Structure formats: C-alpha cells, structure tokens
Length: 136
Image 1 (tube, rainbow, N blue to C red):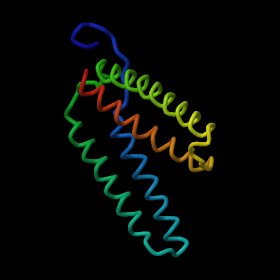
Image 2: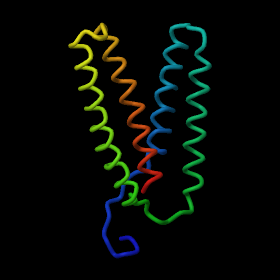
Image 3: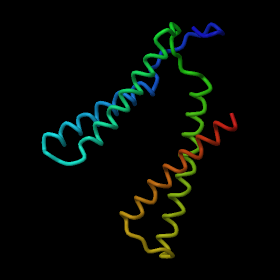
C-alpha cells in the first residue's frame, strides 16, 4: 500500500533486469567468440563484466532497503500519455509520406521508406516522452 492506502502491484525495476540481461548476453557472446578463436572476445567480456559490476552495485545499494518498490502513478501516466501522443504523430507522418509517394513527388524504395519510418518512430517516441515528462 502507498501513502494514500491504495494497494499497488509490485514491479521489478528495469535497471536490474537490463543489467542482468546485458551481462548474460555479452558474456555468452564473449564465450562463443573465444571458442571460435575470434579476436576481440575480450571486448564482449569487458562489456559483460561492466554490466555485471553495475548489477552488483545496484543490489548492494538496495540491500538495506526493506521497502518494496512500487510503480509510480505519475510514471505510468506519463508512459501512457506519451505512447498515445507518439502513435497519433506517427500516424500523421505515415499518412503524409503515403500522400507524397502516391503523387510521385518523392520516389523512394520501400526498404528506405521503412527505415525512415522506424527512425522517425524512435525519435517521436523519445520526444513525446520527454515532452510529457516535462509537462506533467
């Protein structure tokens, strides 16, 4: 329960999951490169080791913390609001690109168009998240 007495679900912090997954992934890549005698395997082990060190650091600083981690309502609201905004903006961008390409104002290959839309989607998602975080 939080301060207002509302029961909230416990969620795992994404830092822990991300650090663990990166440590395991890069360590496995390093082992595969070591077994296949590829140069540069030490880079993969280095990144995996740094991620493991970060994970251990996070576990160490939260060791004495007996409080449960709860998802903040504000964080959830910002995430939902930014997703809605980014979807609307991306829909408009796709509609404009379709209109421009159908009128042959721009001749573009489909693979380049898909790459462009993916890059624009990432930029829009980041921009709307930062906008919503600043605004709310």
